[in-house]
Length: 635
Image (tube, one colour):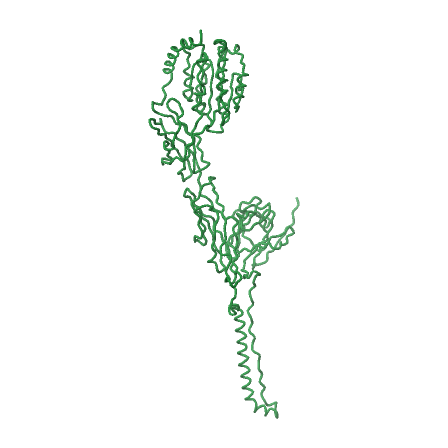
């Protein structure tokens, strides 16, 4: 019989078979004019921008193209949110051919066997494929996996051409090739957009050969694997085989089933796979402002169609406000007077100072900021409402006398979450103003000295005047004394007491008076002697020590010292308590570890930060520290 006459003779049986197939297939839950939505792969790594993947199919299973943002309705925890963008992408297909041949496929159609016709049809399809995206090709047979995720269609063609099963020895068809194919899909799921499709080519299955098919279908649905089935039969005439179980498999996974006899009955495989080659990536700006689990509802509204039910996705997220940190802040700032010139009067410099900040996002979601602010003594001095948000200018014009300023940062992100930094004390030292006139150049002590000199001169003048008057009064008596000097009184004039000049306070080379400090930290060498230039005055109520300048005020450059190693807190005048800040090597006082409640330091206590040793010295110790040693007891 020729191919044309065979096609004519099969036309009526095909119509009958189609009707029987429709009657045997369970009714779809989709009604006319309705669509099917599938949403998955929600990602929050760019929060507050969230993305997910969306597939939409018409009642015939065709992929809906050209979806616009206005057609998608989103609600986040029942609050509407707008779609930012919709992008149609081609993700690729992981295609697996599950070939289940038996000796029934050795039947001949014309000059070739049915097995050769099926293989040639698949080779022709593979020859039209291109290497694109994440598409891969696998081959599963009764003998195991012959090819696993080849990226080149030519590799698939080569493996299929080399596949030569011993058909005469294969008498009973099984589900083994299909089970291997579904398990392969579960073996590696890296990209949620990759579609997975299995083509199961098999003779009719029945009885015990279908055992486990329902569980396999559930697993394929869970893995989003579409299963397509070609049932090879000797002819489309006569009674059709029972394919109800396989039909339920394809319906559940979104696949298709067809009976194939001669080559002219083979469907176009590419038309079946075409709906799988597209997916939409939808993005939106989240309105979530609190940590926890949230629900996203997706609906698609297209003219003439309405989705069966909205798709729902849930996701959990942890949100925290940003954390501003001063980056390498100064401990003190010195303001000095410039040299006066004919063109410009002397002035204090610097007039401004720049500060750098580090803004961290503890929740891991870097996002935009609305503003960043710098406060000095609780007053706003600088604000950024546009990038860069990490740079500030501090105007020092109000600091004309020495004092301590207290700095703090504040930031607010685009979610409206705000946070402040710790309060940072900074000492502002101001040089005494230059003396322009003679009177200005005379210090307070100089005025006292001049007054003392003038007073002494006045006293001396009064003494001289009194002496002159007394001399005039003594002249007659002097003459008498020449004859009898023993009978005359003798006047004794005492020197005026000299005023004691007040002792000047010590002045540093920079022109600033040395402020009194209650205690010091002195760094010691390995020999226990103080290292020159390592004295740390304890002039603050709290001091941090470590190797990281971003975390510690006193930098201790040693590998054994942690970034933030210890804290020293002044509890009252002259009383200091040392705490460990979770360091790696620990903090030790007099060779004993510092407990969580800290250690109250005494004069000449020995402090170890890792391998670095300090001595705690009080400026006015109550009493000298007494050390007691004990001999080491042998065993």
